[in-house]
Image 1 (spheres, rainbow, N blue to C red):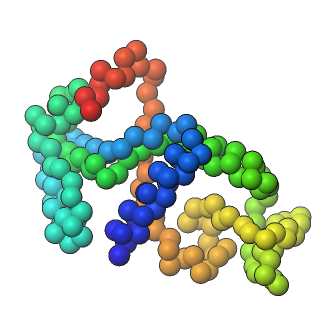
Image 2 (image 1 turned 135 degrees about the vertical axis):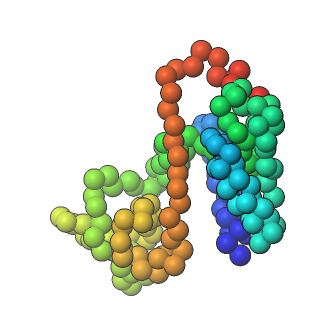
Length: 178
């Protein structure tokens, strides 16, 4: 069930990117690289388990196959997930925010909400200095938000996210084969 929900959410994100023409460098596919034989064995076991348990198919790459995907001999292999993808998260957020404002929404920055409740079919957000009443509210927060919306707690899952930065590359396309 979680796999189906994850796939549906990926489809919704892609749909939003296309519908609103959000320039966020969306690209299909994701590789998790192994820096040692041990990590390749771990990734392979995990990929096999995901397929066995959930029917989620990925490709296990040995060193040679990894070298065909990424122009580096540093990796022992990896797992290629053609169902996953990646975006530029800040540009995606900015694109969503622009669409919200275009549709008449208001973004209240630097206004930490301490309580969120529903009163007479309206949403009341309480901050340190004000109460804001609205027809709808978007809760855009991380797990550190605590008990702000208790009904959402069962849908919250901690996800490990990696963002890497390098110096500007002269020819980045030469590093990635696909």
